[in-house]
Structure formats: C-alpha cells, structure tokens
Image (tube, rainbow, N blue to C red; front, side, top):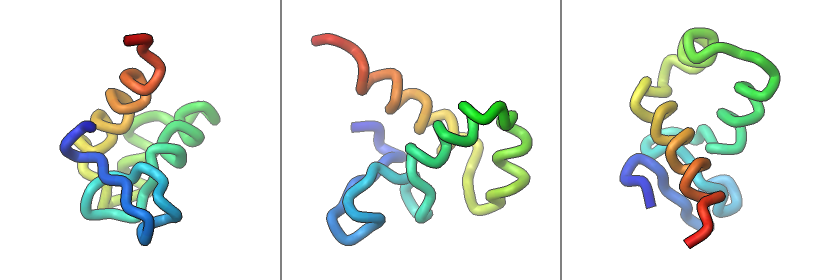
Length: 67
C-alpha cells in the first residue's frame, strides 16, 4: 500500500485515507470527478499535503491494475 495511505477499522470505517488526516481517497476522487482542480482541493483542505493528494491518485490507479 502507498505509504501515505492508511486504512484502519477505527478510522472512517476502514476506508483508505491520507495518513495524518481524516480525508479519504474516495473524497479526493469524488472531488476530482466533480471537476475540482488540485489547487481548489488543496485550498479547501489545508491539512491535506500536496503529496497526499498525489498518493491518493497513485493508490486509485494501483487499485485497478490487474496483477
């Protein structure tokens, strides 16, 4: 798993999240799907590091790769 992504049962019901935040990968993807830009997301969530946003995208990309 991406080192900036954590998934623990007690944190947001086990959804993958950006380490050190309560921001889920799912939220990041939903925001991007609604056409929010990286800059808009980072401005709206100042606790989200830019590398965390990139890690969420890498995590999503790897989730859909066929081994």
